[in-house]
Image (cartoon, rainbow, N blue to C red):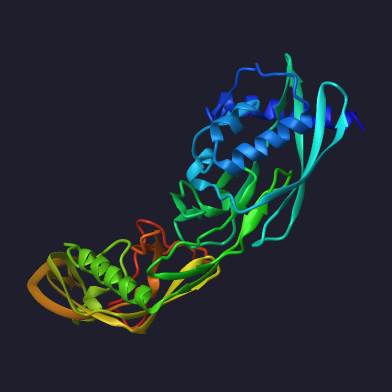
Length: 361
């Protein structure tokens, strides 16, 4: 019985040292304290967390996390709407101990978990007494805990946060663009990462604001001075313009101007961890430019410059090539899509060509 806690404590301690050295993610706390029993330490820790005294709670631990992972280890992120049931010591070999605790609430299912402690100097210290949470498939660029939001700093699949024990409501605040619901959870320390899954629906207001954001993105794209427009929902292929204009060969495309005739009418739906944009109606943009005809001389077997050609062609605007993310204020951010399951993903530098009969990229 006593061997497990000792090994687990050593593993946590080694892990903590690695994190501190490699990422500066936490600091070791000074020892000190008194000779309170492990059960008493856990009871005091839970009482401090429930009352919002995070400094006292952290003083009972052997390691204080820092950085993004600790963003919600604050009084503002806590709820007091939970109670502590039994707190019972289940193992103690004098150097390491385990204490079992139960939490209950009217909003979430009762949970029981185990706290690991190690003895140092004249006191018992809690060893990583936090719940670790991660995100499931979410298309929003923030995480909200008990009304406090934090911008994500990496892809949701890799984002992790540490939370004190207690009751947590996720994405409970109003977002003008979305209806979001996530199950409240009672959390205790454990070996597994708790995945937060959210049900997300785009509201009518959200679609309207997304439309405005897409229109603004298109306006920015239309300021391009090249026929070949990167990361936008429209573009021409300079190598195909001669065919569209009606000559055999043309080069030196210049004096390019794009003018939006109609914006696409979009719909937005949350699916598979992203906000899917579809075109209820495709938009239209006009390309005006000048090119120089190139004429092939079969006798000399060389090209020579012919007349300059001023031309105007109509191109489609297809918003389905765009991605959307949204913040806690309901404001949308528009970018190009990067999720295509093809041999040639559309990434920066690749272009959607919408001036021909068929769209290519």
